[in-house]
Image 1 (cartoon, rainbow, N blue to C red):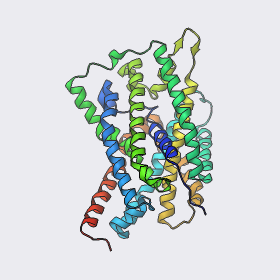
Image 2 (image 1 turned 180 degrees about the vertical axis):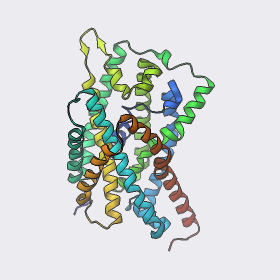
Image 3 (image 1 turned 30 degrees about the vertical axis):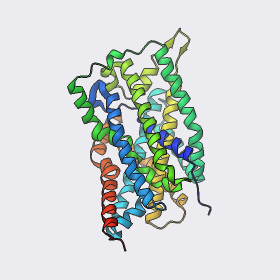
Image 4 (image 1 turned 135 degrees about the horizontal axis):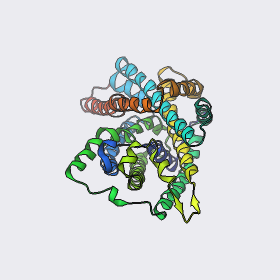
Length: 365
């Protein structure tokens, strides 16, 4: 089978769409109050540093995904079980993204449609595109990147034109606000969404020009960080911190307030489309990562044979993991605090350090 190849611009688009994903729709960094936008900026350097660690490991082992070089660095007796832990965590987080998309669609437009139907349609689309291969998926991302950028420009533009923005909701920033922003940035926003890029340790080996992986990835992360910062700043400036913190989907609440000359209004369809696109790409990359790691660990030659089983597990996990959206959010706080940091930061940093030590003292056979 011909090796699939992803171009630099396609990888750039995938990273931006992945980072935007659900982070642009749901409230993040609530611990920092009205300084959420500042928390995102503070977490950005940490996100870049974490990606550089992923990229360094990729450059050291260009033909291996994370489960491959974990076994090579730590040995198969430690590396194999450790790599196995990635699979349920990745699938569970993918199911959470699916659940959030289904809940927004039901609350916004499809209140009479069972969540099973909505989630099934989305996961079928994910399974279809992954069966076509990562190269086709990357080309799709390149197209939808521009669609997302245009929709974001339109949505933020009409909110500003409507005169809804009040920058007084973003200031002042006292010493406590700066400390709260820093506390919220690390580890919460650092891990979600920046640390989630650990999924790309399974995608980078497909990159056509490996030499630009660092520059390309850092540029994509910086762009994503500024887009998230700007969007959440607009939401807080319109809604105020009280409504922003209580709204399940602040961006949807913000866009429903738009009314320009009694002519431009009801733009919530753009927000729903933004969510669908963002969740589709983020969930697809999560499912792809879980699939290729499973294929690598269990010696399955073609990862596409595992796409359907992984998709079915993600689908049913999406509505058995929590009874309602409030439980879903509470569950997410625990998951973000204990599980995601382990696979997104602790393990990659450990691999980076152990590899450097083994290489320095010639401990590889």
